[in-house]
Image: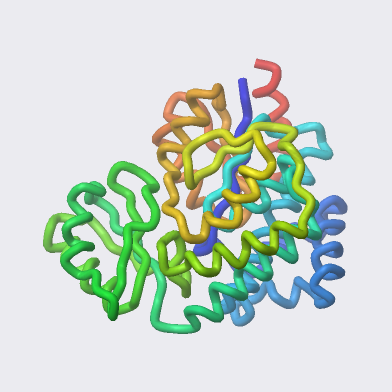
Length: 309
């Protein structure tokens, strides 16, 4: 039985996500390495106030994901494949051996800084539950304009979608979606319009930064949630990482791919349990576990059992 590690994106952050791991020696090494690379104490970024910054959120999610994965791998409980949503693709790439961790810290800091500087206010993302992409598309088209752009950003499930754009456009589409039968709309804790063409220029800048970073072939299967494909070429993965901030997320299709490739246990890295909820319908006859809700030794035992089956 194959094991998948999933790494969440922005919006899943929780204050204290790193502090909760700091007592684990393997995680502490990752936290210290993060602070050394940043020339700042990353634990000071792990607070409610600090996490209002896109930069702090993305760095802490990177560190928490790599730290938890390291704890499990060093107990012999390694995954067979990895997949990350948005910023989660970076800790996935580190876990797969594609990027060195310190390079990932520098790239993620650049990524988040570019996004935050381009959209310091007035933009974000909203989840739409209960409508199909086909039903939502004309509502987006009705509202979208150069002054108030809005795009379909995430296809997390057949009727679990996320839109990105200006505050005004998000509110208008959400209202129309409810009129058309959506069950719920939720403004996400994300201050930038990720996964749409508004960030194309920043993706090009990030691609330039990748030219100075060594990348390696993955040691295990790397699943791109932008392309819903397994990528094996290191330069292809680097391109995927650079551009995922401006590309739609196809999480549901990616989880179907993981299932088709033999994954039967999906373990979500910190923080939160959003991906576990999105993955569970695809893994209905398998198992989904969340690291935030389980002790590391329990997760390691679960993973080791899965490998023996």
